[in-house]
Image 1: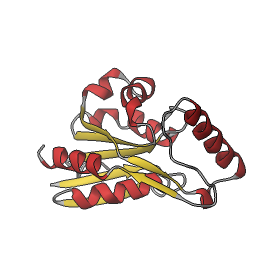
Image 2 (image 1 turned 30 degrees about the vertical axis):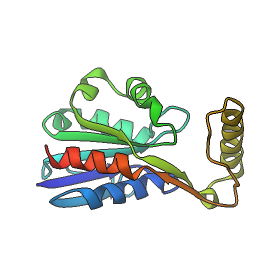
Image 3 (image 1 turned 90 degrees about the vertical axis):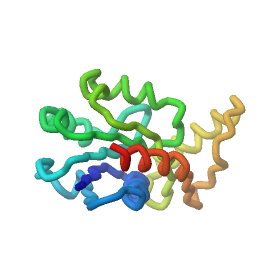
Image 4 (image 1 turned 120 degrees about the vertical axis):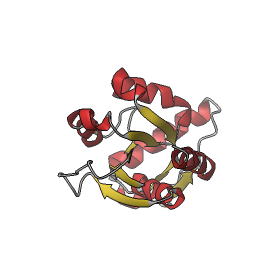
Length: 171
């Protein structure tokens, strides 16, 4: 069974998530960055997995446009979605706020695979925002990761990734 993983990745975390997911999938798997390829043909795939980062509760605009442009063919496929984000407790909100009800109903699986902060690839403003958010969460005792913007942080959830790929291998 052929599977296509289409992802959007600004700093590289969603790409790393795509690679980890691909390792757990059975059959032929092709990874495609939506940035690198605008003419993605879905006809040859039984499964389509979409990967998007979350920034301020919103998905990547290119992934959203891709879903809207290919809605008719996606309805005929086994479609799964993974989020690359640090707050997996908000999956339902990410879905509701970014996708149509029709799209959500068609999903075979949805998961948050964790994420990463690759500070060397971020600009000053992005680093500043992350630092402020984690400081805010510390005050509310949410136990965010300690942030030193000189050191990259990877917090991928291998258990969630394994659960996701297992579910996809069974459909």
